[in-house]
Image (cartoon, rainbow, N blue to C red):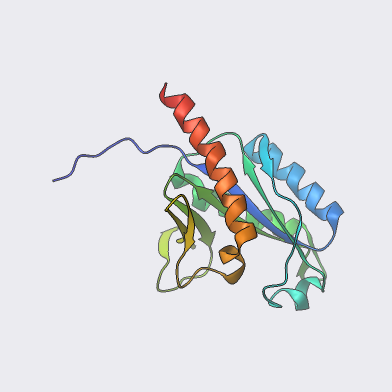
Length: 177
């Protein structure tokens, strides 16, 4: 029988898909009020890997990622997804969202995303929220699975997540001292 160990806190991240910069800034400010100071913000990337969101958002979509300084218990992910869904609803016009928010977390071994959609590789958490191991860390970098979204497999995204993981590892190392 294995021993039960204390679970380390994890690094909250949120991915944004948006078209209007002002919407991004407003939503970022709301998230900062909810989850604390932001310690990483990626460059703006063109979101060109799928046209899935174009009917709702329009063309020329953008992608950004942020992470928060305060580490969280991993079991908070479902509650956070419910919060981000409510923020998306606040930024809806004519039944179309202006922002898509993808909360998740990074720890030393993986990147987890929350979803409202079930699938063969997702695990139910609570309140209609599922978790997916989207990337795993091996050979000093994040690696993709067969189910990983195409954009999450790109070198640009991988480097963003590696940067956030480095911040996380520095925080965990300080906490262990």
